[in-house]
Image (cartoon, rainbow, N blue to C red):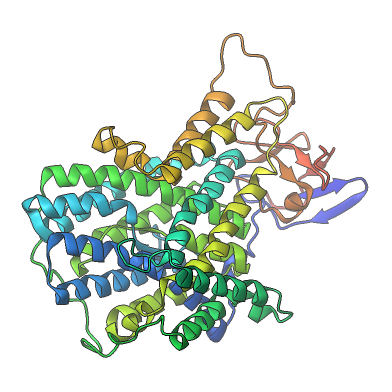
Length: 521
């Protein structure tokens, strides 16, 4: 199609059969080379390492497994998380969003898995419940792929902002030492080490060399760890213990069993995980500035659920996208999905070489906490940037944003808020991310989609007031959605509603869009 605005012109590739131009140069497809990909990939691994090993440690301890079996659970989760990350980022037909999303064991499943493990079923019941619930999730994926129309910027902005804010307690806990029962938890030494690491991140971010600036998180973690070793706050005594290399033994805890109560409880968890993963896919799509449609969401969810079905074979748990790594994409500006593929490879190696896993495990948590403050804050800032593009005139979008963020922060600032509610309710709403996503979607439907008999028409001529396309985005075709088309020289959506085009100052522009004569369509 050809764009003409105030005498200017821009030629684009021929439109697709549906009338929408396709940009074949996706930012996430950029290849950075082996060295840089491994370097940036290592940052992703260090960012999420604490999160991926915590669930197997908690569940294994609750089930009363031996120390050797506990180590096996940890390495198995690393191995499975690496395979799931490669599947998600590289993609095969029907599986994988092909976005820079790191996969790992979902923390949302921990409470349910602990309950299953301690109610007489042991680890076989845990793995059976994971496998059966993930298979059910795989079957209902097409339904979840239909919800993208209910995730306009007013919703995705809320979710991205809440992801960053809800992760701040994680960073604070790491900065204080990670173990609330430890005598030095919250000590000036721990917080000082976190502050030192944060300072290094800020200094390196100002470096003139782009490679140093983008690897500031990794370099700061290395510098912080070296400093911690010098002052005696890092301990490496466990590095030499245990085997050097080992392949995860399939069904090491016995064949899985399928208790009905465990499967039902895990199905609820799977629904929560699918909601969070959908939000993460949309969030990273906004950060990378690449189109995300229903097909891509469906492929991403199938990768999640497919990996979760296979995970119990290798002694792993339910997989999901890691929100903290979305923040790393935002802060570094490295959008290549192959960087995440490299991090998946590193996780696989860590799963096969327990000795390397023990080295990474030796990094003091306060060091990760100092880096996490910048990391998670960047996620929140990205969400605020998305919310800044929302139109708040003549609609109730401000109420949607305020109520949804407030609901999302309730379980973050008051973790026991829902303790008196039924277990199924707590499972869903204990996550601030899920709470915010549910509230934002429902409120957006209520205020922007449900029509009342006496409801006045919006002040704007554009029905979907929370969606617009910037002029530069029209030229690059990055914000057109499936079903968008040209009618009488104007862009309209699948419902035939006009989509406004705004200039740099936010003003609606009179843009004429027409089909090329030689497009062949």
